[in-house]
Image (cartoon, rainbow, N blue to C red):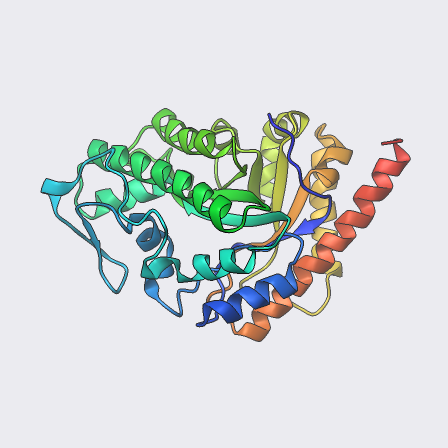
Length: 335
């Protein structure tokens, strides 16, 4: 596994924000999380900035409706055909364009996300494409989009180190008996996209919620986004092996549902308690803290701007505590 070139104790976000103006959203992100800002997506500005419409945009034979739904011309669906908007000029990518433009003179990492091939394949199948064709098409589309994204960042913000998360919520259901794709095939699709990105970017994988993390890790991400949940303890062995290979974990540790509170103490106790449980199963305590990021649990598109700001403040405070503890651990072991 390639070494992840990130600093200890970084906080970042999932991407979705409540803003309706891309420039305002970009300034918000850069002010709140300047060390690892995340490209915003603004579904309140346009439904086309949601996950599936962005992924399906520019696919020959697929029309993305203003409400984000898909309309298909089956005669024109051809796996392997390049997407028709390689420069991200369409409506779904207004916030991406504003974000990259603001990074033009930046040196350092920035976080991006792509809808993964399994999730896009599920959406195409739901819209009426036969399963085999849906996932073949999704794989070629997302791989092409990944190449285009790297080229776009390189052309417009050459000093930026891309950190690209593949967003795959559908992987949570891949073991269900009625899922339209086998588990091995699903992992192969995601692995192919990550392999396309890896020579040019730090790669992450986010599934959200509960997942079979043993299975997810087979796809080969460099960063795994996981909820800070005790459910992870039962899969601690897979996590320890991932950390031992140099992988990092993005801990989704700040709630985005219900009251968030005004202090970070409760969140820190919960995260520290989870780490203590993992250590008792054999997970390396230093790697747990030195190969870690902090994120909210989900996006912030349904919040008020002030609530989004408060959430990211908690992410920042939690990341600061992580930095302090990780630095102390490194010193204590002579690293």
